[in-house]
Image (cartoon, rainbow, N blue to C red; front, top):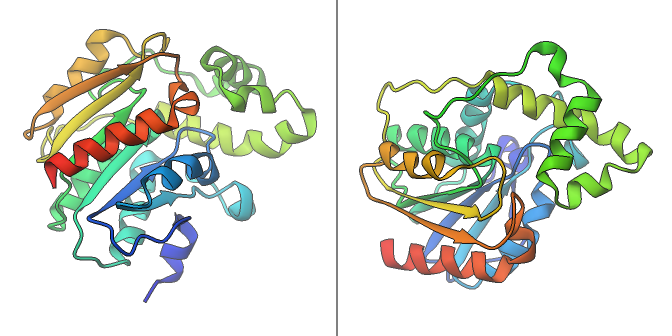
Length: 253
């Protein structure tokens, strides 16, 4: 029986009675579950796709946002474990969602859940730090500039003042969670399953060394694929991304 925690955190847009594996999808900072509806639609024939809906947006807009990435990982794992299944669970995370996915996988493995592959999209490896933002850095101006650099539909939508005022609290909380995250090598710096890094060739946030460093975080093998485009390459290539995910899971399950 689905618990209240699972209903809050997980969205299943398509039925998947014949699924061979479950895929957990973790959105980017400021993102919502509905952005990944096209991915779910393309994978529904073979995978049970569950997309996380973070608090502070859409139907969860009145809920307090989570500004700690590790606490967010705990919530996601609790929600997922409340939906028992005999299927193995692959994980796909985009940008912030990739780092969150790494922490989710580490937790799932401690519960004995097999995760054959983590798809780390548009994100540097957890151990690859960068200059941190100061508390004053989370102003609307700074956040809007950051999103403009990344591009994508989200940046264009936020040009509307009314939408911006509604969305910015969730964006700010996600960036606070990302910027406060510190990689801890314990209990293990590596996940047991494979890691596949997906990147856009012109993404300004992920250099080649940042991507290949994901190999340091897996005992199950590392691979990568580069797509045409920038940080939000997947929005223009849902079909190719879905085929990459489906083929890799079919090979690993």
